[in-house]
Length: 120
Length: 106
Image (cartoon, rainbow over all chains, first blue to last red):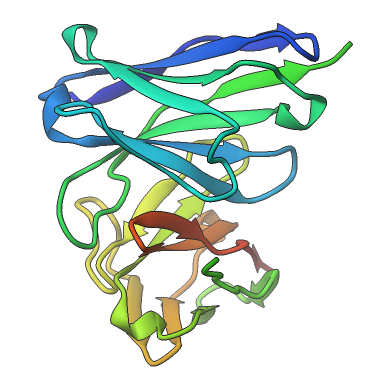
C-alpha cells in the first residue's frame, strides 16, 4: 500500500527555522516525483515545487523560489520542505504529494498534511 | 505567470448535472487534472490527462479540455459530491492550480 506520512504539526516563532518531512512507503521512492502544496487557512491549493528523489532534480514555482528549500534523502525515502526564517504568513497546511513521471502527470497520492503555525 | 480561473461557487440539485469550468490561455494545449477536496481531508484526484479517471472514481465524473477552457462534469450529482474542486495544469514545468470551486448540492 502506497503511503506518504508527514511529520506532525509545528508551532514556531517568527524568524525561526523549520524542516518538515514526508516519508514514502509501499513504492520505489526514487521513481516518482514528490511535490509540496500549500493551503492557507480557508484558501485554495498552491503549488510550491517538486523534487525527483532519483537525481534530486528540483523545480520551484515562481512564488516560492528563494522562500523555501525542497530536498530529499532517498536512503530513507523522505522528502523535506524547509524554511530558514519563518514569517507569520507561512502559517498554513502543507501537503506532500506523489506524482508519476511523464507528460500530464498528476498527484496520485497525497500526504495527510502538516499544519504549520507561526506566531509570536 | 500562468493563471487558471474557476468560478468560486457552483450550486446543483441532487440528481442533476454539475459543470465546473477552468479557464487559461491555450489551456487546451496542456493536460488538465481535477482534484476533489472534502472538508478536513486531503485532496483526491478525480480526473487526469483531461478526461481519464483514476481507479475507484465513479463514472459520473468526466472531463474535457479544448481551446481555453477545461470542464469537469458531474452527472447525477450526489450529496457526497459536495466539496471543493480544483483544476491543475503544468506551465513551463511548474504546477498551477485554479482558485477552486465550492460545489454545493442543494
